[in-house]
Length: 424
Picture 1 (tube, rainbow, N blue to C red):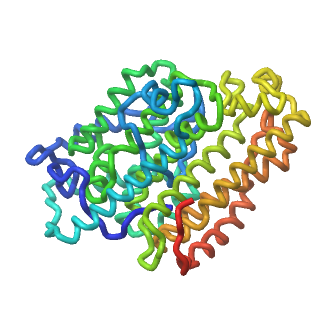
Picture 2: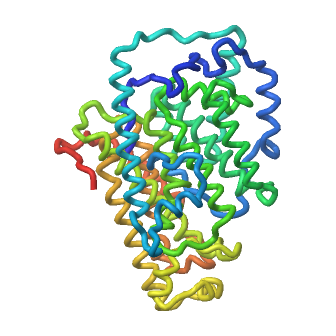
Picture 3: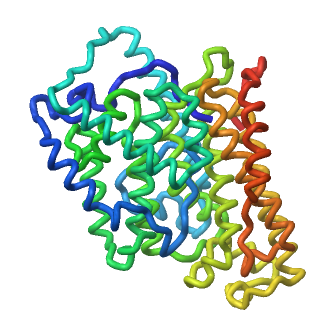
């Protein structure tokens, strides 16, 4: 599920690559300015859950597509003149999986012909960069405890890089789900995207940006999935209903699947894996979709209280249900039948993801297996609650988490399959 290629250290922006990611060729950033800006970004330097849909950071998923193009462009691409889908979101996204896999392969070939030069470390910047990564680790430890534990098994370089990516995702999510979400406008997201571009060009705004800027200078991380996550935030500002699963799939890709593509070049594929790069990315996408669907099914009541329904409208109608039934928050036989089908679909995506996890670098498998096993158990808890996801929040208890961790670790020890993994 992470189609990263172990050992690749090619920057996506070769013209701007200093080892620290602080530089734009000869430009030096004042460390005190970075520190001051980072401290003021969040209220009390803490992340709060509030607002619209809490997104699931699956750590795997799909490469972004359509870049900075807005959602009206997506609609024109997907819809035919008759109003029917000319090509499904799944196919559109998978087409980009192929493009991203080809990009990584090309970077690998380029890497073989490159002379590896040592990082340029400027006096006074290394300590700041270490502090930036440490801060990212603290945030990850506080808000993703299980995953953070798994990252401790990674090499120091991979561990820090994953922390930096995680923090950027949280900060992006805070723009529409944080305490100031009601004041966020599309223009604010445009500014955040511009800041992202500066970061990728070696011009970080604050110390947390600096950690990610350093990461993307060392690994073949493409800017596209980051831009697509911002497009997911734009979608949440303007959309609260999804006509069918195709639309919902696209949303899941934006807000969860993109995280995988960010993480893929860092996680790595096992050297003994016979899987194609494309198939590993496709499995990564499946886990991202599965986790986000689970997140949606768990939070139906919470979302309804905000006037939002993240469920396919056509499937609700086919089950004899409507938004009014959801807002009434009553578990009926119709609701149980509907939920069984939704849970079955999420489990199908989990099943598709499993083989891909086995293909990961051995040092990266444990946190991913833990994520997969624990999120899949949320579906079990929804069933145990008699499908009451209106007033009861399904969660995995601490004892079950404790049991899941060694199981995930045991699964992480299983080497890649001897057979080739083929795309679905």
